[in-house]
Length: 267
Image 1 (tube, rainbow, N blue to C red):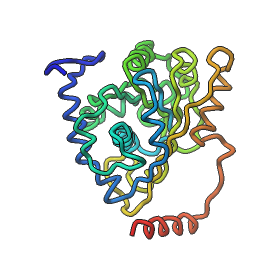
Image 2: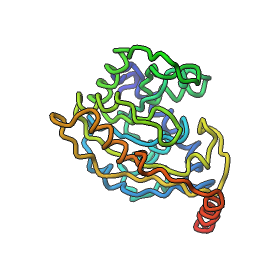
Image 3: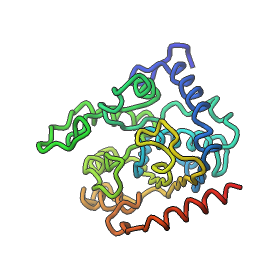
């Protein structure tokens, strides 16, 4: 890698690599120390092609979810089996990992702008602005979908198809259009425990001793020619366990009992 070699978005790879190393080292204890990240399915990561892979996941915090994925992906590619022990995997990270994020989120302060350099594909949300839902949806910016295409052609893309950290919100059809148009390998990920571990932004540890789960599933079986947008949306909802059929009311005392059990498991 040359000192000033750049990716398709103009980011200097040498600088990006050091940002991944530094932020990876600073955040490692958030998933292996303060809390415990339970990983399942890391062998799937090692079997994926180098390009045109789309990861779809439920969303619980703005940044902690993505940071965990960078840890898990690089650890898996370095031979770790369902764990992120020994952060040596950060020394030679995979450089063509990108993630889709709202433009307004990535512009809200210096730290988000730095994290954006690590691999954000910023998009303008058509249904939300200034932290509130809008009544009149805006037109999709063509450059947003073009940037996702470029990222898929260069490597792996992480997206949160609900477009929000709130559970059981509908999957946006834009994700289905991307899948149908660009035909990527679609890998579902289901996470849990991040909402209890971190604040909404995912920058501050809110509670320690939480067992976080990170499940990587087999790639989706999609008929790119014959599946409709609605069928793909439904497959995505089931895959990331956000279909309404998964919704159930959990009593507060049951949640507290589970958290206590998770703390005991760590010792």
